[in-house]
Image (cartoon, rainbow, N blue to C red; front, side, top):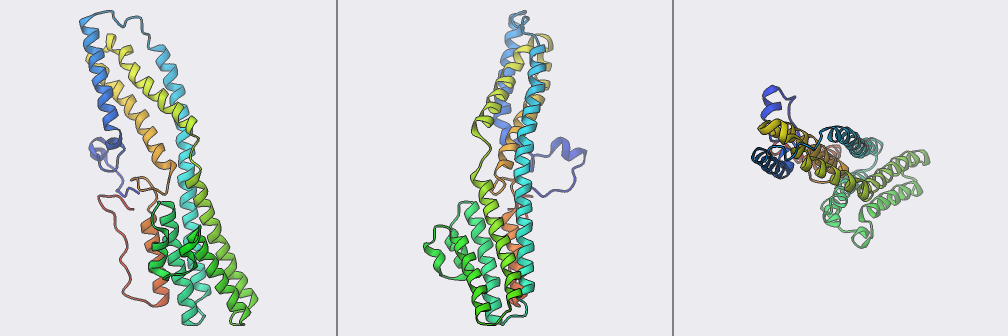
Length: 298
């Protein structure tokens, strides 16, 4: 996630770090080169593009902007839902930490370190990392090593631990029910995150918008070169920056759990949970919070 103060006029005009510009710079250069070629052709052969009207481009541009807005809204909904799921995960971990605070140190240690392992395993699962190694860094070896879904296997192990405590009479049924409620919330969070990660925006829909945006921006210089001359570059690059930028931003928001600059800072949120769980155990020194690197928080 990009971390920057509110931009002033200077940052709005000249900021590159944190903007979508580096991702689309190649496309803008291509459009600029085509625009220059169209301008030179129009100057060398006056009237060459005189029959190309700007009216169709106006209509297509309005429709295209609406469709891109719909796609970006859908992608932002995925990003925001992912953030809400991780907010629920933080709430569940804190609630469990409070509800096990009266248990024996060994039992409390197992469940709180298990929560650290669950969170780290979920991040690795969503980002295509080594899920088992992420879990074992907190919980050691266990039945999750050979499991199809190691993170869920760890959660099942934590749930079985709670059931065992109740059967042994070390916690009451109500206490176990309260813990099981939060374990169920963790399972819902994992399933929700997997649903977002494994269900992209339909490819045909994205492909249609990509192609239309490219065709529109590539053809626009030929409609303007005959009347605007070198001023053609200004509206063409501005429109291209807007369409390509929104398109690229939608691609980043579509998968909120990745490593793009606008994705969710899962590593930072995982470290927050880890610090709070270890603090509840009285461990120290705590690992430091993850700070932004080049104004991007991972």
